[in-house]
Image (cartoon, rainbow, N blue to C red; front, side, top):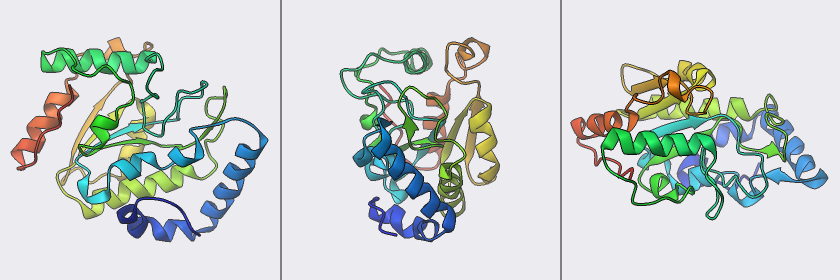
Length: 222
């Protein structure tokens, strides 16, 4: 199957594209786009991979679904298109960034491509969603695909940082070799759980300390 995805990822995931579940997933997603509004735009389904090639990944931040509101989702987990109001979870992520690093954000855009281009893979477990219908594309095959992404990174790379926020993300952590990588777990940054341990978890400074300790350039989160 011809899937338009960044070449280094295509090399690792080509086996997934040949599996029956991916053919079924592709048929489902095509029909959904034909039937009505689906997010993100088709060109942005694999944007997280396009901006962050396999060998450039340093940090993985795992989300669940793309945003399902009009014009929000842009293919990067937790991010929104420029000009969109910041969703509550992203507001809380920015609050923790500033608190953790002790400095104000220099960039207020919710796009987050500045993180992706430095090696932060902003990966949603499900890469598409029907408009105004949270979870509508779950259990259609995307989870198997993103499991394969996590397994490939865990097995072929070393000294990556995985940020798992919330129970859904923590469950995906079963595919990570914790003897090779740093796994940072906390509650989800949504308003329902951020005060239960996301605030004060300091994932950004911990990630950078780990990267520096393994001779990697830290991420400029600000």
